[in-house]
Length: 155
Image 1 (cartoon, rainbow, N blue to C red):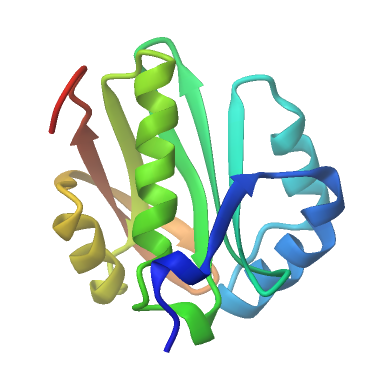
Image 2: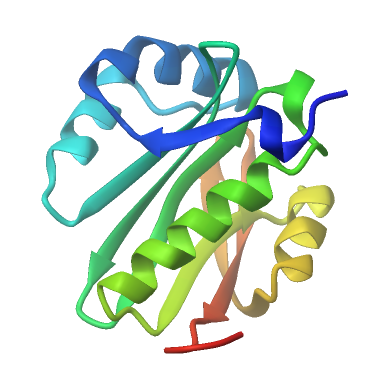
């Protein structure tokens, strides 16, 4: 079993795009396309990080900032590396980025039926603040909207 110290986090590089798209397709029933990733990563307000284990991309997270808040756009961890701390490392990195750019709240949507992801986010101090009906299309599902307040100095 791997530990978080076995994983290297770094900023996304354009050469990561094919591996990122492949991992997304393996993880989600309605994955982002290559074009969606490429256009999202092109925005100056998007920050993206990847997790590597033995030179293989095993996780990723994208966040977009706007003034004092940010949206977690997508996050994924390879099934072989889930429940090993990789997701937490990615979220912690995003929160560090948010603090750096003076963001005070991080928002995300998660499928209503994805109870394990909701529990993961709750462990990281996200709270449910709303529902978006029919937000996901394949399969159709509501989105639970969650928020984490980001303190300026300590948490």
